[in-house]
Length: 427
Image (cartoon, rainbow, N blue to C red; front, side, top):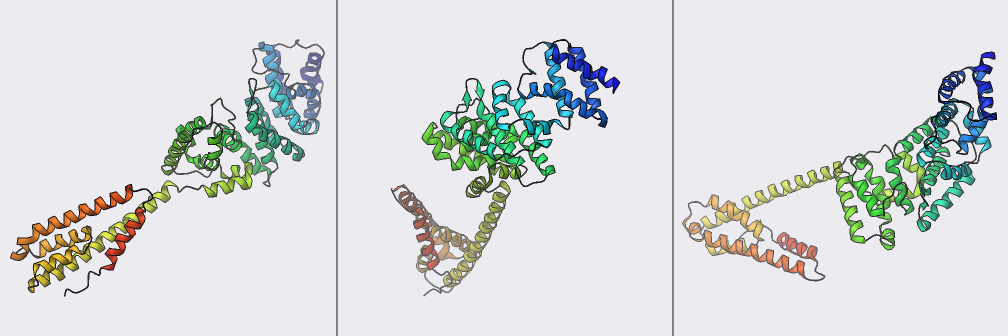
């Protein structure tokens, strides 16, 4: 303890009485000694008590870590921060002494948002223990005002601080155990770069960046390859609030173009569910509802559906080929049995052009040596092709008419085809 007094207690107390006595090198030496002392059971509590005035300077942002201060002042700041992080009793001391919302207001005034996030990260993972019910109500009220008032106050993006505090409260009050909460804190602070854009959509106010509006936000998100696996977490609230943004300051065509790009990117990217649990904690029921309401199929689901459609088309094509062959055999047999070629032609023209052409091609194979067929086959083919052109023209005309029901037209044509049974015997 005598060594402790001379190495730490005396110089730190002297510095409190006469600030500026310790220089850069002194602070570096003290830091190494203090961190070692924090690992010794008999010394760490006395050191914690000596450090409390310095912790007050830290909490009230009187330390300037990144300001253009002298090397000695910056060295002191680093000393206090690192000892604070090594002190197992420091976070409990903060919990008992400070209201976290009031602390946030101090950090908005005196520290960067990045420094504030580091503080919350440490508090969250080091057992910050206080009733957050009032704080949650306060921060929710601040967040609700952002849509009207905007996020910036002078040169400060206050929305960024409030969003981080909101996340801190939601994770800290979640039902998970301490280990799982630590994972969620890590996930939030590691992915803040993306999460700030989701907050921007949820709050209908750009936070955490100097982007002009939500269209700019959407474009940045869509263009960042690292965000691609998480796009659905951004897309769902954006789609939900699309009309709100258009009524404010976004041109609908520009926002819709951005949404379309995001949809295409989502269809091409395997989604990650790594952040799902975190987002359910940050935005509980409302966010889940939006995700379900605006759920897009993943690219694997789309690939599977395309494969199924392809298989069906192949099966349909095979079935059409088999039916064409069967009908061609019947018509060929009829012609060989002296049924007039005109009746064969009439039967062919009862089909839609697609089926008629398939049967015609099979007849060409079966009747290669038939004189009657060889005489009329080219004329029959031309009539089928002409019918095909008429069907296409009719379809395009119907499509161009205002209020036309193209699906109805297609169904009508399908019913017509189904109404004719290719196995009906010739008269």
